[in-house]
Length: 148
Image (cartoon, rainbow, N blue to C red; front, side, top):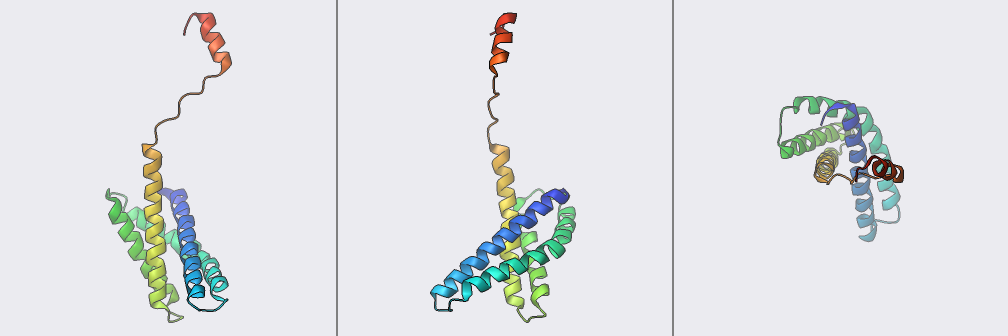
């Protein structure tokens, strides 16, 4: 992964993973008897989590991608992003005394986003090329020139 655009897409995926995990956690908590406020609170956590991903995660992701630029193994990238995401999440939530929550959310969202990015790149790289679209005018010109 190289460049600001790739890291920005990784940050968007990280926010999506964080939102999904927060929403599912809220649903599970609501179903387990956590009250009706669990899902809105989880959505609020996801929305508030987008700001640190953009402000802190983007520059950290650029630096980490620069450090990993010569490493070819995908699992090393996923593990590195997960570990750094966990450390950043724990550091950001240490003031609120929620270190383990920050660690867990950082590991899952950053590692999950990096895995998702690799999966998307592999999917595009292995997709067969689209057949060339032939315009009717091209067929007429080819027929006039004696080509089939």
